[in-house]
Each structure stands twice: as structure tokens, then as C-alpha cells.
Amino acid sequence: MLAKRRTLEARSYYKRALILNHNHRQALYGMARLFSSPECKNGKDAVVYASRLCETTHYRYPKYIGVLGKTFEVSGNNNKAIEITRSAIDLAEKIHDFRSLPQLKKQMEELIAAGLISNPSAAN
Image (cartoon, rainbow, N blue to C red; front, top):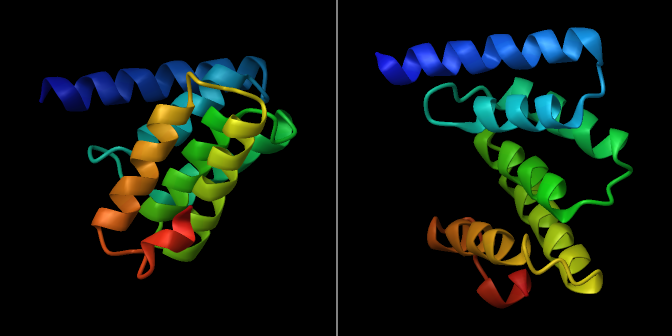
């Protein structure tokens, strides 16, 4: 019950922020993560918010691209999830984003563990 109330409060907060600034990065990120969470799990909306976040930031932030990959996984588009997550890892390595890299690699490992990648070496 408490988790659901907090989820609704967060959603309300993010929506208000997006009314004031429809490209508010933290609000787009929050909505994408919220709709990717087990409590909300709405892949279609998650992809919309994550896509807008990545477009707004010109696909320059591996963390945001990783969230986009996660939203595709939640929406059931596993091939796109793998492709996007791989590109986020590649970008993080290229720009030396060592803060995002561990989470992105963990995300890829979860895709492998779930059996979504038949050839794990293809993920590298």
C-alpha cells in the first residue's frame, strides 16, 4: 500500500514538472523508470518517456540510453533492448563513463541470464 502511494506521488510530481518543462530530464528519467518498475510496469509509456529523454539529450548519456534499453525489455521488445543496452555500454566505454558502466553491464547480464540472448558473446 505504501509503495503504491509513493508511486502515485512520484508520478504526480513528475507530471507537474513536465507540465512546466516538457523536456525536464529528471522528470522524463523518473517517468521512464517508474513505468519500467514492477509496481507500474507499463512498457508502452516507459518507452515514450525514455525515447523523449534520449532525443532531448541527443543520445549523449549512457545512463539514459540504458533506461531506454530497459523500457524496451519491459515492453517485450527484447531484440531492441539488447541492441540499445549494447550501444549504451559502447558509449559509456568510449567516453569513460565509469559511473554508468557497472549498471549497464549488470543490465546486459540480466538479459543474458533471462535467456534473451542466445549467444552471450554477441552481447560483447
